Length: 234
Image: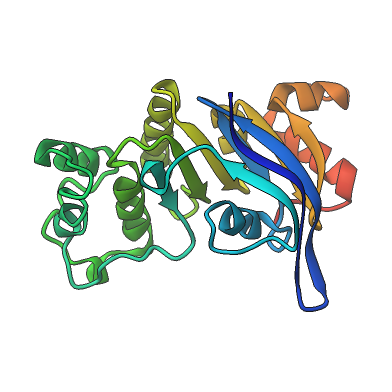
């Protein structure tokens, strides 16, 4: 079953054409990754799919109600004067979530010792973890993650990866953007490569490497991108 779909979507900001006929499908219960350098259009695609932006042309569909979607985007939207637990309690009654799940989720993202710490005193990485905790609280049907581990240490990142995989195994469709080749290989069932507003390749990471006669290593996935574009993901 298709959970997320884009067909021939175009989007411009003034004279700058950011998306140039983008088409893809993400299926139910898979981790779908979008790889591309800054400015390639990844965040614009997420903003369109989450109805923060309208398309200029083309069609898009997300098979979930707004209450069934989890978001971890560039702007975290945390309540800075509230502590970590209070930031989640705000959503406790909205989604009818037991307090035990709030505490368990904070533990899973490495914030079990920061329950009473105000959001405005958290580091960037800790804010990122709190944003993820808030996004997964209600076990969403579809999850959008924009660079979910970009500011995290390797140990915490591995814990986040396990949480994302658990969501997938429970039937959640996970749509994530990343620059991290290792993250893409270890997490994603399928990826698309986006460059200058155009999808230039798609498929399972190993299959993509095999198509270009690579040896199916992390570095080779990046090598494919360089081969196709002449540049890296940074």
